[in-house]
Amino acid sequence: PVQVLRETAATDAPETELVLSVYSAGGRKLISYAPQPERIEKIPDPMPPAGKPEEIRTVEELYLTGLHLEQYRHATWLPDGYYLEGLRRDPGDIRCNDAWGTLLLRRGRFEEAEPYFQEGLKLCDQEGSISRGEYYADAFRTELAEEEGLEGSTTGTMLAQASLLVEDGDLDGAEAVYTDLIQKGEDLEKVYNQYLMLKAKQGDFPAAFRLLSYVQTGSDAAAKKDADWNEVLLYELQMDYGTALTKLEAFMKAYPPTETVWREYAFLSRAAAGF
Image 1 (cartoon, rainbow, N blue to C red):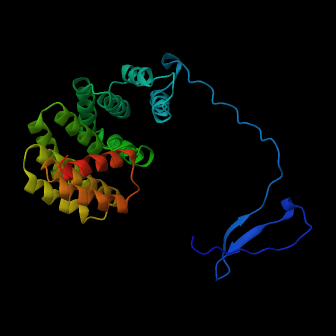
Image 2 (cartoon, helix red, strand yellow):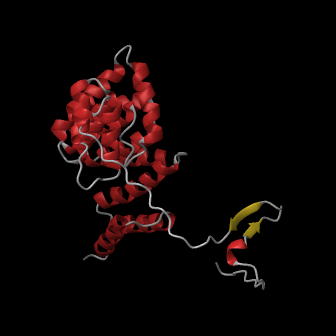
Image 3 (tube, rainbow, N blue to C red):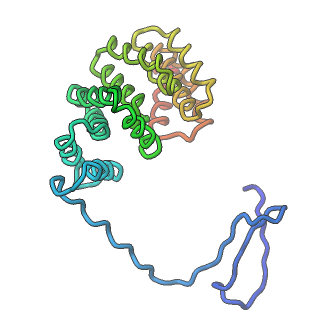
């Protein structure tokens, strides 16, 4: 802050008996602080290690254990055995199919991942399984808001499938998936953010910029941030490095730069200068 309020008050009271509070003009307490006596706090007991996959009783526990290991990036335990044991017991479990397929996708094992996404989609679409799929979708949106939002719903699974197809070079297959997603009409800003990069790969930049404009004028702040980043990439793909750099500088003013952003800035600064 430019101006700091400094006040001094003399007191003989022990520090631990004092409380500093800040109130609004209307008398509402905003924050308070009370020094605590110095003591050695008891360290919480460590979480007991997970049981072996074959020892865990339910598919629910297997799935959650695998998810826990993924989220905390455990140094010595892998989630693989828990997802695979869940699928061995119930090949139709939507969450284990989605989780295992996504994990394979992250590892670059595209062809191995696709059948699990296909199985998850098939189960979501089957009559009688729709309610279960919808239940999982709602739970996923709340509990698994991870990375690019690829987990957690039928739409998310289809986006993962489309991404897989693009990585595998099947642009026509990815186009078909995006077309289905657009017809569904769900999470369109997220769908368009991925779809516009496919259009750029296909060389259809006018279509890519139309999709970009839709997302940038939408109400989803997270999607708009992704779209602003994609705008930089679109100009870079067209080798318009000067405009890409200008867009990136605006992006860096709007959002805290990450290491990836700084690397992109270094590259575009040199490219725009002709180096």
